[in-house]
Image (cartoon, rainbow, N blue to C red; front, side, top):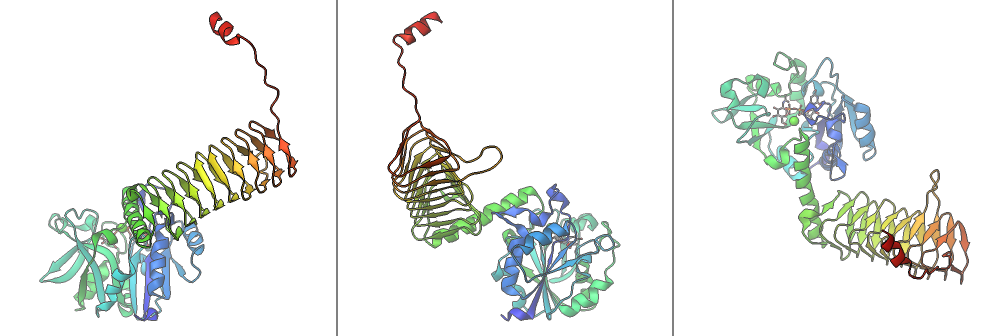
Length: 434
Ligand code: UD1
Ligand code: CA
């Protein structure tokens, strides 16, 4: 298909009151990215002329989408004077001969399904699905196999409410249809809005054929509530994980694993049950054990967990990280940190062992400081490293030591524990008194 022959308009100006949220509906996230992001991404695969109609919280919508896309147009709807999906089309300028109108609240739309709208040669193609409970949707009135009009829930008669064919809300129009009928829309309906759906009945009255296209309910279901949002997220999770498994990732109990859009896997990777991997994380030839959390981090030739937490900007290579270890903004290369540690704002080099309960004290309440640990260092259990601090190569820190800011030089042992006192029969005296 010729990418340049189609324009796409995405309606994203509505309030989305049913979300019960101060945030614009289209900015709610699914698998780590805003709903609108997915629709624009799919649209860009089809068209070079993508327009997003904004109004409600327009600055926030434009700002967040501009982080991902530089080549889309934003048009502002005059929502005060021309509310409604038809009002949203008023200021839109269409470059190509045909235009696909999408809703900003349909994050699951796939390119293959949208291509079908253009395989049909017709001035108006509209999406339909059949629902046992059509509540909330515009009903499609079909007579003698032909679409006559769409009636909104709030305008429908008792008889019309029973109709189970509903308008999925996606249409392909010839440019001339939009140019002719959008200016003619009226708002004499229950919501006093300008309905895009009225284009259908107006065109039909002029003898223009409306072609219905049956679409997949799951994919074309709009997200209107937070329940819909979580339903859509479950579906998208399944897609993300299925595609990762197809590309070679091993997953145990995938239904318990959460992996965000954009996480990259390379080589042979295993992800055990209960893991959460988010943001710009990249996992290469590694084993992520049960219930670990990895955020915006890189893990290469390593094993992590169970129950480990890599916070943003952690970078692991040839490293073993065991249970209850938290790492933040740190680079570990060839390191073993087996148990119960916090490693923050640190670099740790090859052959180094971080004992159980070691903590980098990186924060003094005002500023954060760096910890630098060299090669073949042995940090004994339950030690605190008060940053800024450097442990050069070949250093030992005795168990239970507090190393204050500064440098421990190569070959040195740092030990701060005081001499052990032993008091004879103390135990018996102490408890006998109680
Ligand atoms: C719309 C259809 C309905 C269809 C349903 C499918 C109309 C009048 N009704 O209803 O027939 O069954 O979609 O999901 O078109 N929007 C704007 N500006 C506005 C109002 C809405 O840009 O003034 C945008 C919204 O951000 C959203 C889309 O249009 O992305 C749909 O709006 P929504 O309020 O969800 O429409 P429905 O009432 O669901
Ligand atoms: Ca909707």
